[in-house]
Image (cartoon, rainbow, N blue to C red; front, top):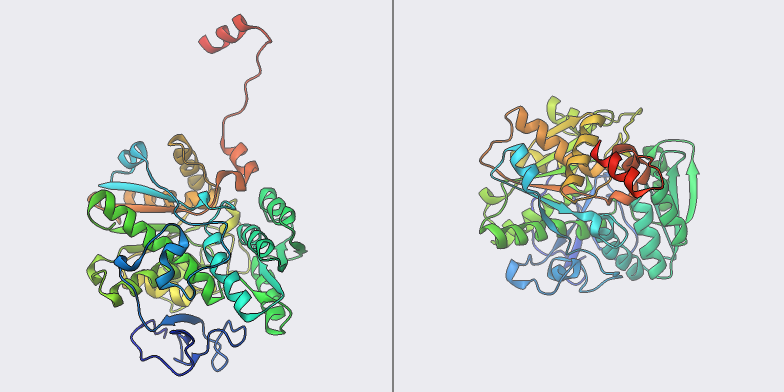
Length: 417
């Protein structure tokens, strides 16, 4: 059973008030002595812990590093990242039928996805450890972010992708930023198995969300949502709905809220309900919630046009499932056609996202129709990647061009028809 309690005395292994704790057995580890991804005793997931947890009053500046008091360092390898918009979507809000609906658009980060938040912290830790090669498995967005931040830090980057399963825009980003790209004959989970083994052999520093410091950067999404929503409404949202692939954001947001509760900056009954959305063809987290599993069961065969969440073995499930349950949230699976419809609805509001991002809105619609989400709720939907991450999907979802003659009158006649 995962233990996510933050209350603990500072151990001798702490460095600058920071240490790692196994969420399964409680083993405490030095954070920066050597690369460590799982507990060496039991294999459990690790979580960064701190001697002190800050309140909102201790945050200053903009972007991810506004929250340096809640991070392992006071600066990192930055492009910069964070400070993404919390869009108003009035027509969509009225259509769904909730008290308020806002969209946190993480596609407005430097490489077009939320992954930049994790990389600014993770690459800074890599520098502290003195590694020379960074690596990840990716459905696309992680590879783009790793390549950009690794390039900024002048570190070699290695990316493993499932062959033929990654949107061309994302591969192009990683290639242009200088990553060495290996296409593996297998799915994302197979790629992660291999890159994890490479990391265990000391061949590279792993920067997938299995790395606990990646999630430290991503938790700043939660801080930003609460601050911006409270500025606009004088209260925090009731529910945050987000796409789920490896479940890193779900785990990260829950950690942000636990830290604020520990600091006394947020009451336990104010913590938003975390609600995960997966594509029906890749929904092990939904299965675990519906069946009451303590962890997910690996899906070997996964398929969805929402490539960023085409994952059958979410490694952060032991952190994310308790977060969904403890906050009174839930998880729901949506069909690909529902995702595309939500992508169009967001685009009509001027918010351009890739398919996986639109899963959050598709899931909210479904839960509202089923009566799980109440009309009195304040809701934030998280969108994780930019429209241009997957231009082929955008073109397929959009309207076809209309051929016309090279003549003004002919164009006016066409428009009148």
